[in-house]
Image (cartoon, rainbow, N blue to C red):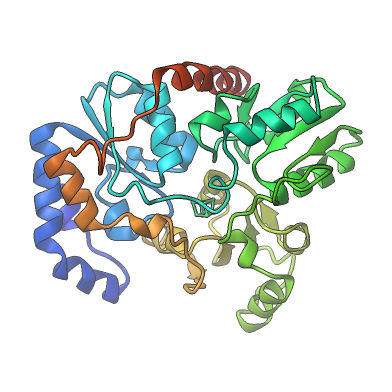
Amino acid sequence: MPQAAIRYHDPLLQLEAEANKTIIERILLLKEQKDVLILGHNYMHPLIYNLSPPEARGDSLALSKYAAETDKPIILFDGVVFMAETAKILNPTKKVLIASKKAGCSLADPLRGEQVRALKKQFPGLPVVTYINSYADVKAESDICCTSANALKVILSTKAKRVIFLPDSLMGENLQVELKKMGSDVELIYPGKKNKLPAGKCEVHDKFTVDDIRRVREQYDIPKGHPHRAVLVHWECTPEVVQEADFCGSTSQMANYIKEKKPERIFLATECEMAANLQNEFPQTEFIRQCNVYCQHMRQITLKGILSALETEDKELHEVIVPESVRKKALVPIQKMLEIIG
Ligand code: SF4
């Protein structure tokens, strides 16, 4: 069981791994016996992240694409529910399990298919571009999906002058700024803009303020524009924070930035565990971590829950079900996006 032999650079993490050795070994044994693909999102605790083989770790879309190609009969998705739904949409013949169905999302939870239908009535004829971080019934009402890495490309592909962008209002604001910078006059309508929907926000990325970024820069000597030190942020942060950063990108783009530029010191304005996971992968880089910033939804995924999912495969507690009528409709906008990005 290669994963059980992982040595962590962080001594506390190593102690934690040793304390959880029995449950980790039991999970890995069941994984082998039942021929399960375990997918690990970047925001998982390192002990959970490392249950997955390196090629099955990553962000929401990368994992779903990987899930679509597997021939294993069972997929266990270590991420939140909407991510596991996407895996099921793309590979419906497989059994998709999750450690806890309580793993929601502050961004995805407030918007469901019903609200999208109401919004489409308010803005008839506008194309609906939906961030992959959304539930299946929202995707089912959408024209095309996007990720934070390809959102601009997808929006412009609609050729429309006004586009409904769901569900992330802060990403919508950031994309609007970027569109203007590019000289585009496309107007984005997102939750809270010219409609009564509550603004959709990721409670993790929304926590970072400009003062936080400036304080980190000063305290850890990361001046703006430094050739080997940088502050990286996500499109789900506020526009002010995005403008204060050295680089803004998706989860996978952040990881690629580190891989390519090999910075000596870095601050990631994102979920704390992502830095912990990357630290293990890129020991040459010093990661400044802000560990009071974590996703309570991702933390619903525990070793105990994973063991229960693998042992019981309980339909009520662990199996992710997407009604076939919703699945078929939700597949269309995902496929359209995949056609565009290749
Ligand atoms: S990090 Fe943000 S977008 Fe991701 S699951 Fe948590 S609340 Fe949702």
